[in-house]
Length: 208
Image (cartoon, rainbow, N blue to C red; front, side):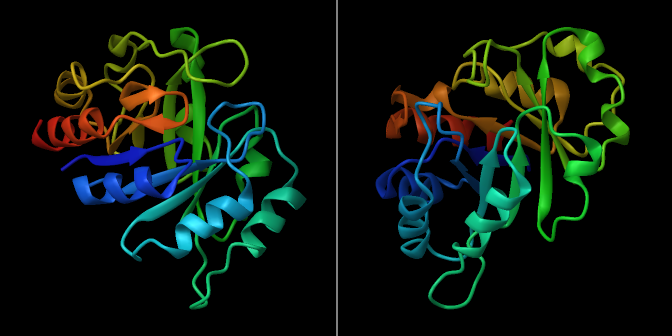
């Protein structure tokens, strides 16, 4: 069954509903210019209130390694667990930057054209997240052409970019990715999830 990651979590209610509906991972965005960014201390408070079962992902964009390490060091929960299970690097981070982390690494690639895929398979990351290109580093809300992925191994791919309740089942059937990532497609407005859409999205993805 495809894994479902819900990104742009900014409040406890959305996090709890995502898990209740069957999400496998929650994404917390530490890129300050994003309307879905969250302060590290607020994210930690949410994570303290959640059960262990989710994989929590800390998202960074072209950040210093020092800041990443500081946020991770401050995210050890009261019971001694590290709050995050994976790091998502969503900018222009190099291969060298992505090596050597103790947590799993998700490297995002922004799909402006088909050649954006060049060299991706050799990148030192546990998972490769494919997002639609847009100016800056926010989501475009539009899907890139999925036929660009024909013939590409998909066991490490997390598909993102313009996924909605209406198209996620088709995406899963066509691409057979390891996982799908949704943010704006299940929002009522930036940073706030529509719980009805969220539930429908997860059900549609997992049933495909």
